[in-house]
Amino acid sequence: AQYPCINPKKQSKKKYQNSGVIHLTELKIFQRPSFLEFVYGGMQINFTVGIDFTGSNGNPANPTSLHYINPYQPNEYMQAIQAVGNVCQDYDTDKLFPALGFGAKLPDGQVSMEFAINFNPSNPYCAGIAGVLEAYKACIQRVTLYGPTNVAPIIYHVARFAEQAQKEEAEKGAHAYFILLLLTDGIITDMDRTRDAIVYASGLPMSLIIVGVGEADFSDMNFLDGDNGTLKGANGRPALRDIVQFVPFRDFKKTTGAELARHVLAEVPQQVVQYYEIRKIPPKPRPTQT
Image (cartoon, rainbow, N blue to C red; front, side, top):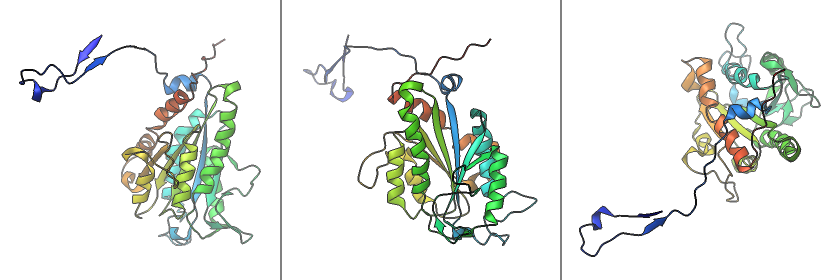
């Protein structure tokens, strides 16, 4: 099959025939699997929460603080965790979620960019989203908000688990995908290292959702979201695929939590399918009902 390429502006010229010919030499038809086919095949979504405990959030004892615990109204951090987590937990059978914090001074005086908010580093898992919220409320009473806003350590933390899952794909197939919900109130201070961490994670079964809390300037966050071009690391290495979705919470204050969740999770199914396409791993067969 041959298809001449015709330039309408040149058609009026007497000797003009075409601007080239496209030859169709091969055609392949394949069915792209859906996100739900991977889920039905047993793929688990592993959901992790990362929370910003830096000083710019304001003193938690002050009602103007983004970390203020109001007994009658959940703060923005709690609302975002609940909205996104309630959707993700339906794709996780054990419903045990690691919850990590960064930018705080811990009770022992150490400043940490990666700590379990239940203060159990060997078992940072919380039982359900309700457990994450309870651990968060207890944690805010014990830590001192500090800084800086370094998020790369938590991205690398989740990426290590995603890398281990990737190594098991030869035996287990499409079995595990990781989502990190990162909540922060301001400008990232380790931007170059964060870019490198995202580029590294882009080749792993992992997606990153960033929710900006408060009224800060989040223009750098939009840069991390690869919608306007391929994100590159500090060394120029491009991301293998777009795995970041950023939204400012303030855009959803007047809507429901379901609307926030719908928006931030909208790209995840496509990211899952794209990852396994690149890896040439099909969904596992759906278990037969007995």
